[in-house]
Length: 305
Image (cartoon, rainbow, N blue to C red; front, side):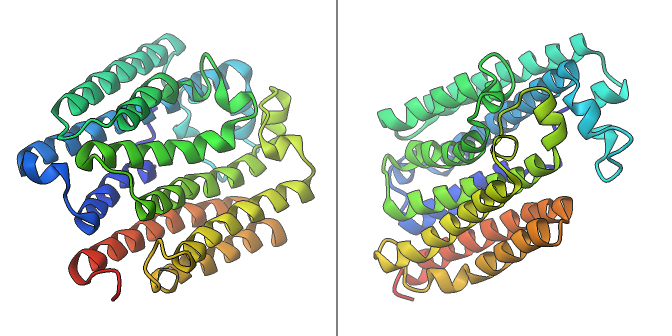
């Protein structure tokens, strides 16, 4: 239920560690390594628990409305039915709901402890953690954010909120280059989620899930995905032009921009949507590795390298 093999949001933690190294340890220096490590572990535990809750309640909703039976049924052999245990019959709905609420509780406890131990507690960072705790599991539950027209924003915002509040709790600061990296990080999950949405149009439309892929024409959906890809490139290049990022930042990140274009061609020119989705997953991981590398280079050599 927790989809632990999709760990892409959890890469926020090593990214934040590298950011802290690049920008100076700030409040973390006075707190000591032990406290900083404890905050990182607790925040990561909360991320894992929140993601598990989000996936679990999404599965329950998809099972109830029948969309998962369509998207993961016998006519969709490229996607593993075992990833949907309710549809496969390996779990019951009450078992899944109990697991979902248990993971919400675990998330809240982890994040309360992380905030209590944090070397800094700027209001914006604490508010970000609170917003995550309240809204994170409501992707397809209660508010049903992904059903009511905000799915794409949610996928990106979840990444942003996994990065910025943790950085604030460790340093007490908000930095421009950190914000750029957080925005790029959040766009990663979005840019494989939109390919899933393209594949899932029939099932999502049948149950009234208002994704962009459902609401617009195929040409409009392709343009939307291209626009999200272009936004990522604009952040990577524009931040250097504006002096927020080192001048060499776009050079290091150029493989991401090139592969992002290839991903779009695979999905919307060749029609290999699920292959494009898988490329997007791997591309997000490559992007995170490059961002960490950039931060470590800044930490060692400075931004003028």
